[in-house]
Length: 237
Length: 228
Image 1 (cartoon, chains in turn blue, red):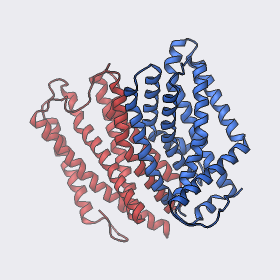
Image 2: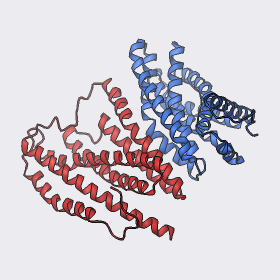
Image 3: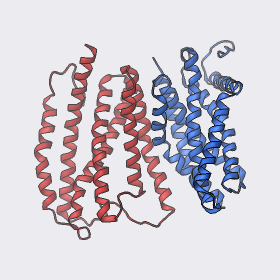
Image 4: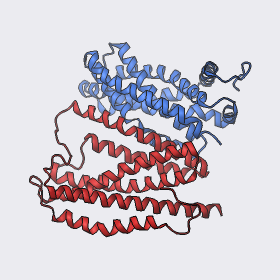
């Protein structure tokens, strides 16, 4: 299924925004129809959390203490898996070249894929949060703050993951290279997200957690900008 | 630091830097051993003369890789990629040296080989990033794509350094159980020690410059052979 051309191809910011949205929607539609991807990632998430709960339990105390770390490790692995899917179908069907040949810069491809990732990751993140809440005895109050932490963390993670997934999409050995390259860069995200989650769950006031949100925000802005600027340069040829 | 087209042998500046570095190395060693032992650590402090220059070079080298990666992304000149790669290679060796000497130093002084101190953790992350840099280079056969991909990692990896450092620092400051601080500041430096350290820093930097130029020259030869 190809990206539908919607009239002329005028460059310009507004037009690029529309392309971003269309690309994300197309990918989302494909992914939801396909179901294989979403189901297998959900299953992976469930099994991983279950095994970790078994490994760390059964006492409530240790489980509760370990929960934020477990949550974010699971989210990290899940994001890595999902990010490969952002470009996998394109490469399989040979449509990546079509996207790259569309006139008017390539940043929108990256942003479209990123938006697609976020549209998948946010619901999956919520699911993970619920499962962790259940298995690890986590009190899930302050839902909005937790969701904000999820959003900021996932955005940081996905911005780098999508970039690398695109970069590596046409290489063999990408399954191993992607986690390797990714994990060394996203340490700040994992640290800050876990700390923010711990703070929220321990009932710390918003100001103290806000420091970690700030760090996440800085990471997100820096890496989103850098990846958007670098993406066209590395996808040529 | 750019070389002329199709060099047949390293140029004079490269030889000069290497020669100077190699000749001054024993002098640096002598100064390091002649400097007085530390008040607290005794003779253990002497590993500092190897450890600090190694760490300094590692960070300098990756900064240079960052600069040349940026230059490559803007100009697409293969010389920039060769130099970025040469600098990363040397940086990796010296950073590895710094990590190992740091661990050897830590064991007798702190009692542990490793601790989650901001500087150490950031250095380990940086090391991992550049191992990834070389693995990525190894996985791509097309020279242009390889250079671009490596340049992207070089840029993204380096801008990670300040962010990583700050995040680990905040992370650590929550748990003030260990207030160990690996820093030359804790070592009360007699003037001879400071001089020896600075001298060794200079010698290592000269060696670095010479080695990067030399490695860049080798890379140019390799490329010529590949094209032929």
